[in-house]
Amino acid sequence: MERIATLTMNPSIDLHTAVERVMPTAKVRCTPACREPGGGGINVARAVRKLDGWALAIYPSGGETGQLLHSLLQEEGVPDQRVSIEGLTRENVTIFERSTGEQYRFVMPGPSMEDGEWRRVLDQVVRLAEDLDFVVASGSLPSGVPVEFYAKLARGLRDTNTQLILDTSGEPLEAALEEGVYLVKPNVRELEQLTSRQLAAAPEREDACRTLVQSKGAQVVALTLEHEGALLVWDNGRLMVPGLAVPVASTVGAGDSFVAGMVLAMARGASLEEAFRRGCASGSAAVMTEGSELCRRSDAESLYERICAEGRGYQSPPGEN
Image 1 (cartoon, rainbow, N blue to C red):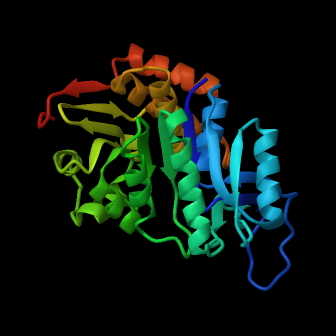
Image 2 (cartoon, rainbow, N blue to C red):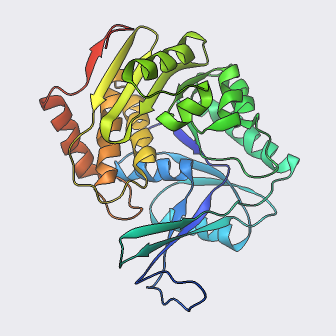
Image 3 (cartoon, rainbow, N blue to C red):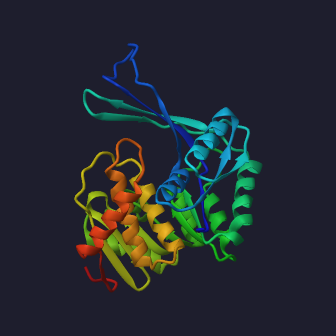
């Protein structure tokens, strides 16, 4: 069994429905609602399960919505550990407008957490570290949780053999990089925010990734580039996988599926380069699914074989483009 845990500090119930047209003030009739577990780390754990792997989802949970989140994860066969909090687990709403094909996403802030609550979550992850190879911390931090939370997590895991993979942005990411993490997965916008630079060209993007590695903030940077593919940078090399031409149904969940494919492959002993290709395949597989559905294993496997067969994913020493 893979030794992976995911951490989601601001989990959610994601409600999806469709309408013919969104109109102000009028009563807009919706299709029956579909509810799914949500939040970065939870979606990574769900995608790992879809890829026939195992990952423990750790998250704070409050009220009836917290219980519903647990039940939905059970239905999908995703093991979880909940840390009880006072506030209600949030609900987000996504509305698909059929007349235009547009999607409207309403994201709630989540409950405010007390000092003792977020510390219990942190302590729970650190206590489990001896039995883990990877912790994937993903998503935003709710009110009450300090921006240094992920930095504290990195510090708590430092004396263990557990590698921290971090998918977040802004001040929480900056603070964590000061402590040092194994792998970060920004997109271009997040990397620009982090480095205070415009990164329009490939050499500039690689240079920004290389700076993070050389500063010891991250041992590995996996930069996702949407339809352009993804770039992997580590201490002695780089790997670029150009984007795959696939039918695009929805980009929701592509980043989480990318992380799931990569961490699952590493947990199974794959090399960093192979794991990156697996991540690219899983992320592209998610793009092929409707709505908020994550990657399908069959699609991820066929796309990985395609990446390998087409020779996609070329490696070169640092600085060569």
